[in-house]
Each structure stands twice: as C-alpha cells, then as structure tokens.
Image (cartoon, rainbow, N blue to C red; front, side):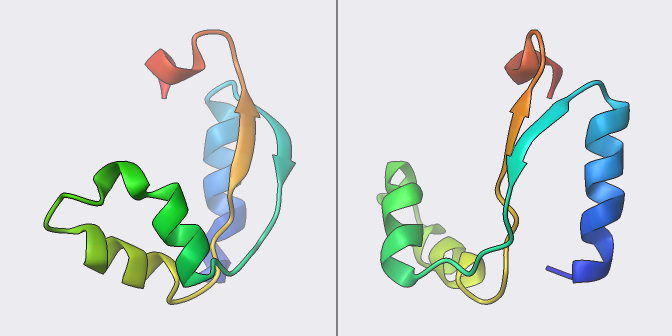
Length: 72
C-alpha cells in the first residue's frame, strides 16, 4: 500500500457518510492473514492473497453507517 494514499482513501470514506470508529496501521503476520482470509482457503488465489496482504502495511478500519454493507 502506498502510504501517501491512506489519507485520501479515508477522506473518500468519510465523504460517503461513514464514521470512522477506529483505525490502525499494521503489518499482518502470515498466520493472521491466513486466519482472516480463511473463508477463501480453497480458492486458487488464496496463496497470492495472503502473500500480498503480508507484503507491507495495511490499515484496517472499523466503520459505522446506517446500511453500511449495502452502501459500501
């Protein structure tokens, strides 16, 4: 992830009406990424997904909004 875009992405999310409840820049361990994406473990892209998600920092964000899943 290019860290120069984090602020821009958060701004877009906020402009879309979402409220940021929490966020944190982290580096996922391989075990954490495998656990988080376990739902995809039988898919052909699983290994590449885990590799990509552990290749650098990521910013998980807890968001709040009425009908958030549908609106996102």
